[in-house]
Image (cartoon, rainbow, N blue to C red; front, side, top):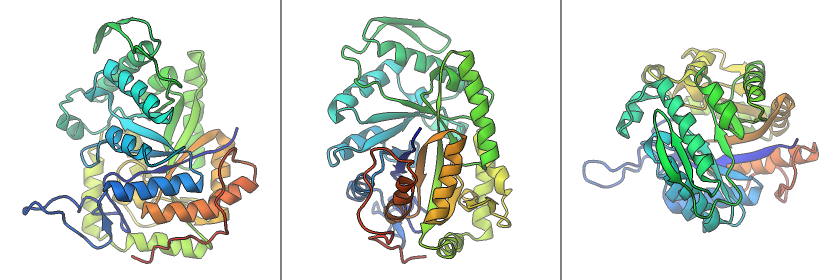
Length: 386
């Protein structure tokens, strides 16, 4: 079992700060705001990140979904025309699209990109966000609908007329005339009791946010047992940020600089908003730091500072390149194969990780078929901002 490395496309904006990544949005005059250190997610910038990820040896890039992001399907199929091998882990919400249409879109995507699609199914843990898209189901009902959605998608991919009669979907004769080849892997996350059985029945890769190793092992054991009851095998992945530098001191100094922008009011407002989420995974992220800046290193080299203001993945691996590689190896020993990583800013951090950590992982025999970048550990691009 080797390690699969993936990077992140910041389609909601990027920068040298953890906050105000949406400040590129038009103001009252209709022109885009330009805030120092904040980069709009235009296609040229996203192409830089995608090309860097491909050159550095990442297998795929995750593209998020939501109100503040560019559409993941459209953005990534455009970027596929500017890359050669890079795969795209496209996040989408089952409740806002027909399962038969999603299956057709995936099949077309595979033909257009010659098989470079991975799917990240996001059931959704924020009712306010779901209602923006016309979805008014509660948390557990959303997972029940996702269960049916994925049953239809997999049925339609068989290439023969498929019927389904459920509580949320009724499909008669659904099919993709030409099924996708290969069938996209389905990544799926969720920490609630409602999510586990859905993952066990449908996920190829169960994706968790970056909790301490002992908690990650508990999740792996939970999902693995549920999958065995279904006669299935599920692989595992983890979503983390990274701050990797030539020395541990430099890495922690960089992480601490990310906190400089976070005044008490900003953190309090973010924590109040995140606390309203119905997501069990989000509550687990919040519990790691409790809204406090004290003791943010919650496990060796695992830093919870990102989660003070960011929803979803709220932890980062912080340390020297060797220390970050140590932590990846530790998670890998638990059964984690897929590492979906990111950093601020995403272009520069891709180089820090790609030129520092990837060669170390390759030397440990953890990578297979990954192009190791030439040169030493020093990055080509250096973030000199705050």
